[in-house]
Amino acid sequence: YKSADDLPTYHLANIVDDHLMEVSHVIRGEEWLPSAPLHVLLYQAFGWEDTMPAFVHLPLLLKPDGKGKLSKRDGDRLGFPVFPLDWNDPKSGERSSGYREAGYLPEAVVNFLALLGWNPGDDREIFAMDQLIKEFSIDHCSRKGAKFDFEKGKWFNHEYLMNMDDSKLADLFKPVLEAHGVNVADYSDEYITRVVSLVKSRANFVGDLWEQANFFFVRPTSYSEKDIRKRWKPETPELMRQLAALLETADMNDAQACENLVMDWIDKGGFHKGNVMNAFRLTVVGECRGPHMFDITQLLGHEETLARLNAGIQNIQMPADA
Image (cartoon, rainbow, N blue to C red; front, side):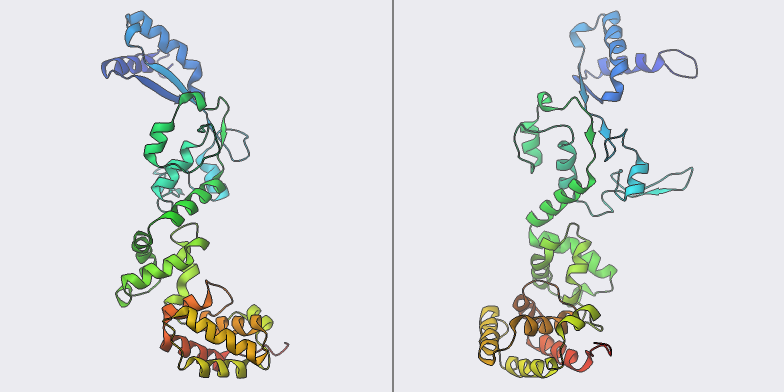
């Protein structure tokens, strides 16, 4: 009933609209169930039984803990979007984040939403749009409400990001680079594409790629104190100088040959492989993280790798209390 006049004007208009537009299915959430009998009665009253649409009720989206209907406040409180796009409330001025601005891929969001209250009858989870259309059946929709598991949404985004073509992902990454002060024109498309291919397994969103790949674009100016304490010993600078001398004539374009050269030097010298390689990584990356070390050096190139190695030898200092 419309509160202004206590008359069922909304339901009447709704029925007439559906009839004139030849609507075949009316799909709503469980919260709409109480009004469904009134719609049926109105169709019968008008003598439109033959054109009455099928009434389909999808599960209600529940809070992540399952206690009550999902609201935008749940997203604001727990840190996940509930709107497709960023939305500013014109009355309160409050901002609610959107899936697009948060870095979610459209295909991932569709796939995630489709499995809220529906399943294909087996354990498959990744579906392209045409597969969803082909597989969907109302018979496989749950009658219970569906918990909104936003962590699962992140998982879907990671899976779609992992399976995206690297060149397409590189194009999406370019605005992120520019936002961090990187002149994209200084790097070839091939270079950026190779970077994202090396680090995307560690990212859930396109924006995460910067944290994983920034050292490919910015030479480290500081070094992780935690890693220095663990990996930088009194003898490390001398070992790094020997490694720099070894790499002077190495072909870093051949990652496997370069790795074989360094591993052979470590074995013959009786050095601790973990300490040497992590110290090397610390000088080049700034901390002990990142993809395979010789994939990094191959991409950075001979001159940049040696420049970083020598800078690390000069600038990394053991803490006074180490």
